[in-house]
Image 1 (cartoon, rainbow, N blue to C red):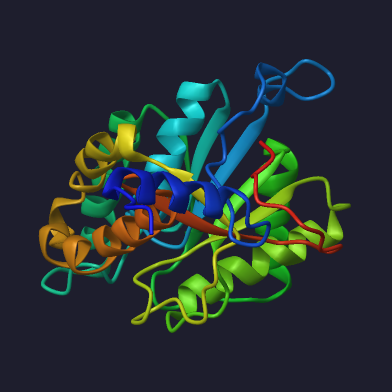
Image 2: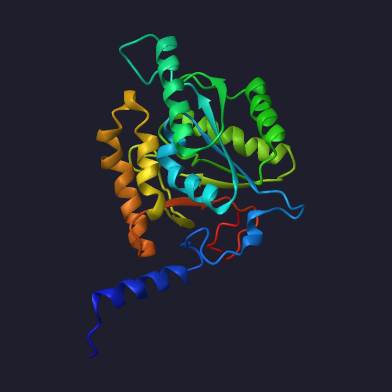
Length: 260
């Protein structure tokens, strides 16, 4: 039997992943420059909607940076101000601190941001909240939205995701949805990725942005959850680090490359 080197085994594993239509591959691998723009010539726009300060950074920070480098127009939306993220202070003080940390993180990433007015731990789904999400998405008119996978143990993650999907249905399905995961096992459940993004080149800067959330003890939970997730998906792509997404398809078909 021919002896196979470890390097060749890694190359073969990467090729197997790239050829598996339901596993997914790097979102930008092999994509032409034309995919950076819409048919009208405008840069494609992406909204990353996270339930709390640090959710966009931890769940999709590397992808945000990679999209920016590839020429896409990216904006972060925070569903809440993280009012219950610091238990030793009042809700108002926690919101103030975490809002400042979010702005610092967005400055580090190099993206603009929007804050919605839901309350951390008390987010709602009702007629008023449906309209709020619709107004933001209609005003921004993104080509793609990245947001929480709806099967999750955190109510805010679920509610954020449900409001995005309702908006997609009501405004004419003009944007694509890709779901990200948060602390799989503890929060996101039954997450089976369809699309993977190689973030190795942008990993360090992602971590720098995430660690702007100094009040959140990121040094404890990030290595315990998200770093392991990134390493796992990196193994599937035969790279060092990757982020994972579930593509929402109303008409499922074989795929694996995130069209952005």
